[in-house]
Length: 208
Image (cartoon, rainbow, N blue to C red):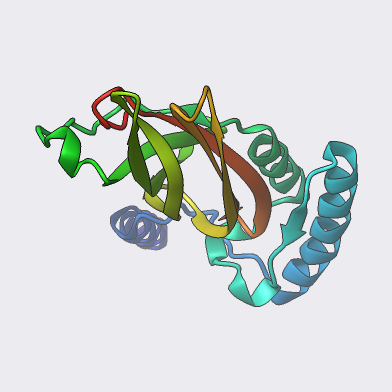
């Protein structure tokens, strides 16, 4: 009887320790051997999905993986598919127009944000900023050039790295179409994305 009571107390203590530490009783980490096998399968998955989507998708070096990045090949494939299909949506404009006079509107900095969402809870918000040089012509301001195009991640998951940028003046130079390319890295894989936003210039040189 004493042995049974002692065994029961030991089991209760073990469960209590696991509960306090936040670790489930059945938790186990991925072994190095499993990681090596997973990585081989990850390579095949990334190559197949890259060809299927005709998008540049790359597997990060195993040394850059966090413990959370090591997941079953099935889960990994699902995340990569979601990341590939994630489309950027323009965020609500948070900029406010100033009260500068028309003569002061020679160079105007402005920024807009776009957000990616993939899976049930993963997202990434990218801010695209640029400086716009305006020029007075026939009584109104027009965009004459765009410079200092930058993009940075302001919130969310993963890592954003800009690759390049470009712009085009459309609508009789009243609108600048700005594009930036970059990579989103998440869960051990990176996908190339192209973000395009339009900035408008009113008659007084205000950019929106």
